[in-house]
Length: 263
Ligand code: FAD
Image (tube, rainbow, N blue to C red; front, side, top):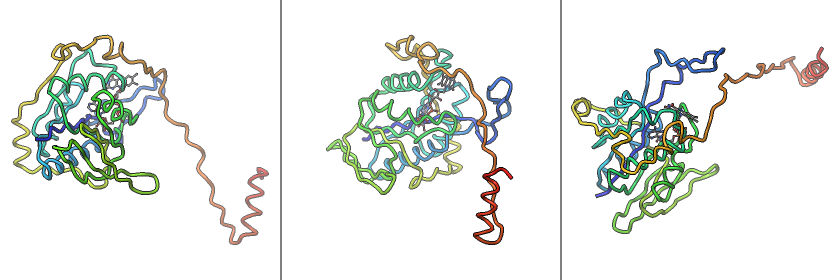
């Protein structure tokens, strides 16, 4: 049976985020938290693979205790199990420390044949986690995956389509394999009532730092994070453009010359 892991993150609804112009910090008060939209697509892909090729789908997140609600969304949509990796010691983690903790936590759950990630989050949006996790799992990786064509568990192989700038590439990779998913073919699943009720009652495995044997405390949280953010500021937007429409090419050109001369 395929063991499938889906990495998900709870994010603030960025459409509602504001920045304090004085301090440069984000104003999170009153901003709802949601399941990162691309992770809902990654979960959808994992569930499709389960339906076609069999398997068990585990959703995992590293985050504060409230990230449990994102996991319950995953359970409602069809995930079999959910794992919350949470500890104050994980706070202030950059992508390096986050991928270390997630891979270490997943290691306590046994091996995985397939790992699904979103392409990026809507808050951090580094897009680094997929590649870092693939290295940490010692897995092959298919980034920007569009469609899973087949999984052959006996041959330890997966075939998938991957989006390129101008076209689509078909790749075959060995298991374990990590895929970062495009949303095109895997719309988010809408949970039904049965799923919601099951998710409400389901037990979620909680792992703290001390539940992960051998976890190196120097590699987690703020101390384990070489990336520092010295300042945040809203982007300065350029002046809006001017449409020139003087009624003809010559008149437009004349007006353009005036604008260049600053008239
Ligand atoms: P991406 O690389 O864009 O995500 C790609 C995919 O990886 C996602 O679609 C998802 O499938 C998976 N993924 C991403 N994050 C997680 C996760 N947490 N669990 C499971 N799967 C995941 N964040 C905080 O919440 N608290 C902090 O205190 C904090 N401090 C930070 C300090 C620094 C200096 C920096 C640079 C970042 C900090 N962050 C903090 C942000 C944190 O590092 C990132 O949110 C996290 O590493 C994921 O990066 P990303 O959002 O760019 O994910």
